[in-house]
Image (cartoon, rainbow, N blue to C red; front, side):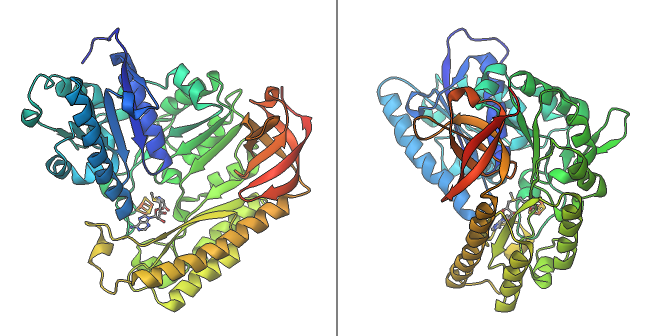
Length: 465
Ligand code: SAM
Ligand code: SF4
């Protein structure tokens, strides 16, 4: 589909799962904009609905099929009134289940995986060409191929108006896929092998975001610190080296990256945390378990001691580094002692925040073939205990900030009149009294208290206009 449509049609994207899906949804809406599709937040108005799905846990994929049931009703209503609506399923469920989605939910016009987003306009043209057919005769278009070409080369750059709508912070995918093959995880199958975008492409996109007013960029990748993109002199560039290059962009004030693997925290990246003010002192570094036998069964390829050693090196470079992590409870064979080891590593590290999940069997992963599955009751009990510990650590981390003065990027009006809100370097939400003119820059804020999930601050002085 090459022509540009004068008449605007409405696109609604529902995004499930991780930040990479948020970024991908924006790219899809960018790809469809030249073809006359304008994003709407009202599903009822949409001519095209895309579900950008997540396959990481069973519940995440189940949600897609129940949503498709609801969409069928909406589509039937629309057709009864003489209209129509196209439906597409994108993302990791689409990649993993492909034809099966089309079979289980014939309501779907297009099924396509994360590597096919640049082909979306063509798929849509083919779906639209079937509109004159009776719904029973239309065929779902399925594209789950991993292409030879670089998807990012074929996707349009972020549009300025979309960027502004996103606000002062933006995601930028630098790496996709994973070669680690942790035994519980579907990512290497749904997102494919590790691929890094070339440095020049990333710098151009980052500059475009900054020109459009973005102050903080979060670099994304399933395994972001395994990044090894083609550099300016033809060789491979690491994430640490990329951070030094991005730090030279005028107007970019904050840089973050997620998600990292402990084995890929190399010396350059750690040194970048020491050298670059722009690199925020908050690191999401999942360990999954504190037990070496579980880590081995999970194929994490590091021990608990090695993880702690990486953290010690990071803290030596950046003593105020706040850490976050991911934990899985109830992996097959996890004993009480294994679980206690997980509580111990949490106690040893002291997290600012953490995500925790009950193990969910994913078909096709090595974990799915393991015996000794843990009962739901045990998983629940372990999850509650772990979350109690992490919540106490988060509360303590917030409380320790009281009395400190932190630079806060003020991003939006607050919930109350006369308030504004933003983020601390440690990714904490901060609320304070202040006028809307503060929005858009970093200000020094004295932390005077905490509330459930955020900090309460008082403006000290403006550091940037
Ligand atoms: N690449 C990252 C890493 O190595 O830690 C994480 C990627 S994954 C999208 C996010 C988190 O989902 C994982 O860290 C893990 O805790 C959780 N997860 C992945 N597969 C899971 C499964 N089968 N059951 C429960 N949690 C899972
Ligand atoms: Fe999944 Fe492991 Fe790769 Fe993370 S490192 S995406 S958990 S396989």
